[in-house]
Length: 218
Ligand code: Z5A
Ligand code: MG
Image 1 (spheres, rainbow, N blue to C red):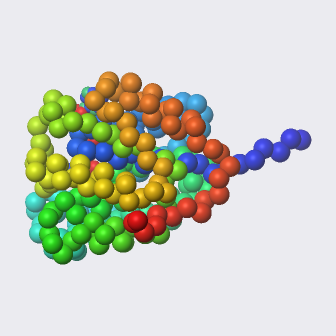
Image 2 (cartoon, rainbow, N blue to C red):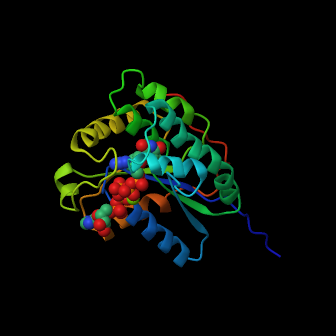
C-alpha cells in the first residue's frame, strides 16, 4: 500500500484594524477549508471564555479597572494558556485560523501612550509563542471603516487610539523581519478579500516542521 505523509496544519493569523473584517474573513476561510474536506479550527483572542478571558472582558467593557501592565500580561497569558492546544491541533493536521494574536497584543497596549509601556516592553511576553506560517494584515482606511458602523462602546474604540494602533502595527511589522506578513486591502468586497487570503494560504508549503516561535524585535 502507498503510504501517505501526514503533514501538520498551518497556523494562519488574521490581524487588522477595527472593523477591517477579521472575524468575517476567519469564518469564510474556515468554511472554505472545511468544504475542501481539510481539518480546520478557529481561535479568537482574547478568548473571553476562560478565567483570564473573563477578566479581560470585564476590563474591555468598562466593568473593571486594571493597571496597564497587568491587563497587558493577562492578554498575553490568555494566549499562553491556549498554545499547547493549538500546537496539538496543528500536529494533528488542523489548520488553525487565529483572529487577532500577539501583534494586536503588543500594539493596543503600546498605543495607550503610557511612557512606561513601550512597544518593546509590550512585545516581550509574546516571545516564544508559535509563529504564524502567514499573517494577513487587513488594512482599511478610517473612512472606509467608518462606513461599516460607528465605534463600539468598548475601551480602545476611539479615533485617537485607532490612529496610534495603525502606526504601531507598521512599526511592529518592520521590526519583525522573519514573520511572513501579507498586507491585504480590506476596503474591497468580502469575497474579493477572501480570494486574496485564499491565494496566500494556497501557496503555503506542507512539509514544514513545527519549530517556529516569535522572536525579539529588531
Ligand atoms: N486587544 C488587546 O488589547 N490585546 C490583545 O492581546 C488582543 C486584543 C488579542 C477586542 O478585540 C479588543 O481587544 C480590541 C483589541 C484588543 N480593541 N479594539 N478596538 P476583538 O477582536 O474582540 O474586537 P472585535 O470587535 O471582534 O473586532 P473588530 O476589529 O471590531 O471587528 P472585525 O472582526 O475586524 O470585523 P467584522 O466583525 O468581521 O466586521 C465588522 C463589520 O463590517 C460587520 O458588520 C461586517 O459584516 C462588515 N464587513 C466585514 N467585511 C466587510 C467588507 N469587505 N465590506 C463591507 N462590510 C464588511
Ligand atoms: Mg472581530
